[in-house]
Image (tube, rainbow, N blue to C red; front, side):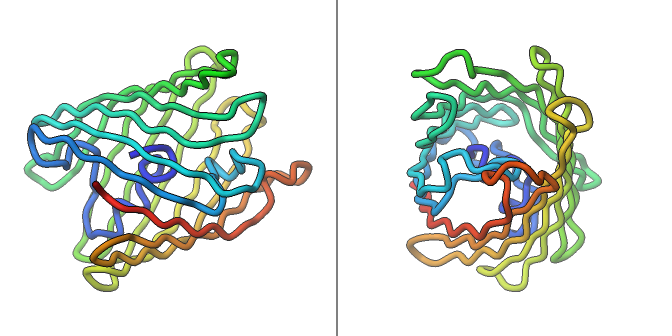
Length: 217
């Protein structure tokens, strides 16, 4: 899961379906590991524009899911980010996918940065095109963030997606976007993505191209 992948749905949707974490087979554990040229979250580099090693583990049983994910970061005195999350996800008889949960962002060496978000999302797939959106609420920092995504499955292994997000309240209400292409192979997956924001005075929010190589365990 992790912020890079699950926050925004884009990488999940290119598979031709809205895929919440609970899509893992019932009662199963899974893992993932990734190396990215830059860890970007909501348009901002989280590792001072340097490569980041990331990975996590997930558990799902029926509609319930839980997991943890970690990444190397470099901001505000933090060197590592640890995400802890859990929730419920499923799909209605009409094919409308839903996902609700909570995620805590923990920075072991800079605990003043810790925060928590409550989220909810909906998605739907029309043949090879999928659309979806999430709302995230941070009660302590009083922020509300919304993102929407659309993905297109060109083949069983190649997909394209676009995601746009904005803070409806808090954090100067800035917006960001990403355009990406993902290729799945027998051994690893490749994601090539362009990020951008409407922030003009912070180089960590400049437009950038990010390559991520990941593998499911």
